Image (cartoon, rainbow, N blue to C red; front, side, top):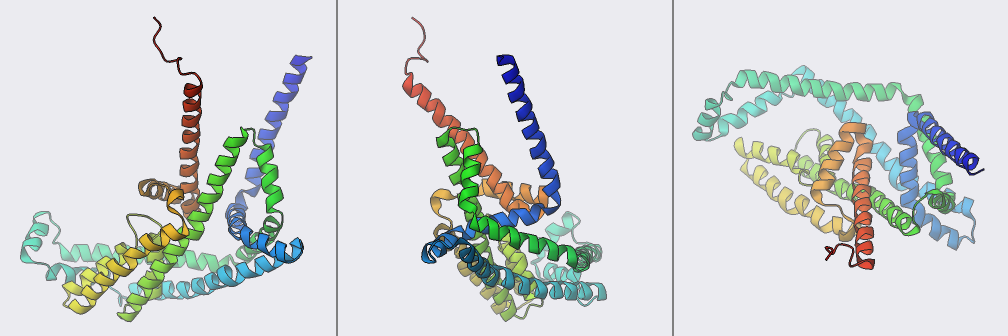
Length: 363
């Protein structure tokens, strides 16, 4: 009798595993849609709870209002910025292809403005072949611009697929916001772990998701906006495009927006525009550079942050593995990994505390 029960239980777990894997394959085409619908629902869940309390437990109306707020402060502004960004990318590609924007020529001007000692050092390592470098830089810029422009064109051609995914995301967002607490309770009850472990991991999961998206993205948007405004004031073409690039790089600690504004400041200084170069360098170091130190602890919280090196490596690894979604998935996996090992350490410490003589050598 026990053998049949064990067989039935094993068969059930096998069936559960198979149908779970099958569901993952079914949802794979809408992975990004489901992911961002769930992330937005998690972020806006506190808004939903407040509205439910004020509206007399009318969850449908509260979810509809929450969806409207999300559209107004997240979706619509992002759509407008994306449209303008696509136009600037197409313009930059046309300039590179037509020769108006010559990256190699800019590099050549910087090299010629360097001190003679540095030029001699570059020549020693065969780095003064300016025509060859200029050609390679221009070709590389053209390839990058062509790749981005092709992606933008592909995005435009797949408008129907985008609209379907966008509608599914909003639909999913509505129900996850409305029924989020019940869904969370069901998932928590179904996880076969110790209750304290479940609560710890679920809190870590929620904290990392909110910190990564709400905190880090907010910091990146502020840094990218400030950098874009600074470049626009200095007369740099495609300031919105470069601001977006700075925003993306700001997601990476220890890398940041300096990869964009620092070379531009060096170019200004090297070509004689000292006021612009020094002004941009000071603004970048003092204003853009300190935004992270001021805003991130407020929006994320010092006690919820991973080490910068862990965020950097996990973010880069996540992006290289699964694309833009990796900037959320990578740190999340790293945080859960650290949390699981921390729980194991606590359990072992608890066992050693309950059995203090287990490690003593026998007499």
